[in-house]
Image (cartoon, rainbow, N blue to C red; front, side, top):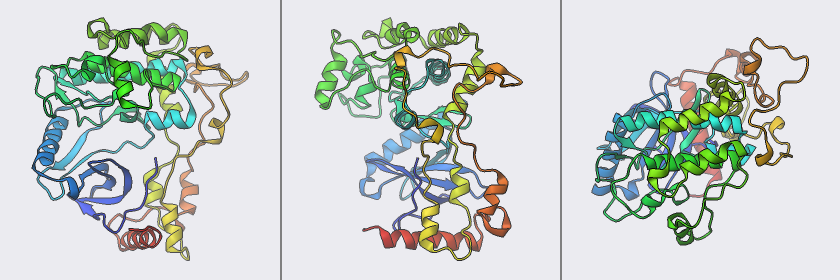
Length: 407
């Protein structure tokens, strides 16, 4: 997940959050990495001034109201928002790590055991959302963040109340990601039911374990045709045998044929426990396997050493999670032939809890505090956010970025 410096046109602060860099963008707006006066990191979403009108502002306000009602340990929380501001903005919990799409793209599909753990975790999280009478409606690999404390679901901008036919979009308009969209949603049926999220979760788990989605086509019209035709089955190639029955059921064409989320949790748990692993242990393995090794905020706020040029400072804060050396080897075993439980640790290795041994070689360890302190000069720690040095550093970054970027 690259964090790039702010451009000269970017605001330095919004709603009390000091903006530190860019972490993403879309057709409607920009997402910044921000920090509250008390040091709390946040993902600050801002609507582009060029698209702000009364309708956009209303939809943004509805998104904020929905986010206020969404809760749960596996959902990125709303921190603050002001839909009436110019420009409108909202701040959500910042999750340090790759999304599932980027992780699989960089490191390959997850082992079957970890996919089952991911399924149990996300199904439980979605069940909590459904109890609040909400549907996600756009669950996809890019909306699952793999943080240091486990996966979290983001982007409820398309969420609707489960018991209502009222949506955030115009009548007869289909909104969502077609490759993860169930047939009834692609056909524009209203009202939608919780089974739309069951289907989308099945598509996410299929991608996690195989590296591809249920349907693939270069043309969006062909893709919609594949999704809505009951005679065209989803592509389950590369799925380990143990997971085929569950994913087949979750991706059923008819909503009533899909299992409820509590049944998804039960089946994922059964798959895990059948291999002699506890569910909590499998979740710890998942987090160990997917957690990002780089501390974005520490690197971003590091005070440049004396004598370094502003260009070097700008380069130092463009942080990217690279593929660790131990994860760059090609996978020699096809996903369909991978065992549900990864191979045990090498003989002679001791552990207080052998069942908690990571399923794969551990990632490269993060630098120790001592090592990081050497990179931060004599102080041994980063400066305060509102110190003079921090503001000088920010100004240097802006100048360096403006000098190298055409606007």
